[in-house]
Length: 342
Image 1 (spheres, helix red, strand yellow):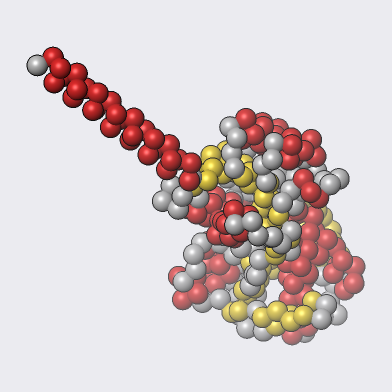
Image 2 (cartoon, rainbow, N blue to C red):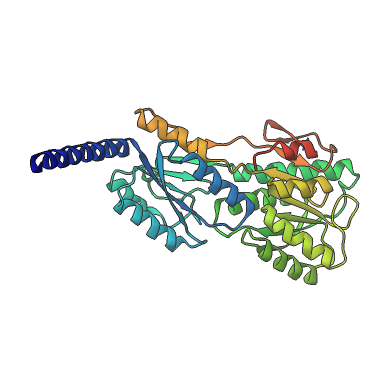
């Protein structure tokens, strides 16, 4: 009897050992990705995070280690070093600002871990410190928006009118802020528009409202508010309406925005946002494509810009031209909003 029990125990132990081996083998096939996200400051960021989480799921053969930096670069530096210690297969970074990454990315490179940058760009002394970047051409976004404004004003008979703009900027030093601000400033200089105020709204609704309230107290001649994302636009609209002014094509102030979130396009449909230039947040599948190519030993593009659209309250402007390229402008509808992924 004792011999039978011993034999049974040995069999169970062997099966358990085999199961452990099988689990380890399965784990060996799993690709581990460490993702350092800026934070959750906007609807766009939420959609970006969800895209990454749904793409790098267990069902897709990944383990995602997610870190929310809460808008602090020092948190991202810590997260990346933790990823290195955990020996992840890939590091994905959505940087708070462009500068200050050389040392930690060198540490990742020394550890043999490819780094993929998403959304905002990094400004490093050696481009080999990261493998690839996926995101938007932020300056082109600004240029397209300003080309739309120029064409819109001309179509409305306001081409020779003095135009006073205020700029609610994004987080200072972020790629989106740098590019969109440059697009505005160059167009204002070229067209003779006055930028009467610029302050950062930090890409948040609360700060956007606070900044707009301050601007309205200082300036009574604002024609256009250039918000560098949708959440800032929501705050700006609240401040403008609370001050007794009207936004929209028949109002006192035109509000322009970027991102084209569902809520942003809903405000575009009502005319509260007159023009909204897309910044596509769905980077997960694009990053996955890069990782799959790297896993297969294939080369990847160093820089990959995503295709993006423009939406306006109406069809006053159907196309805009930047450089030698034309871009369509779509008059927004509820059907378009309902069919979008974010």
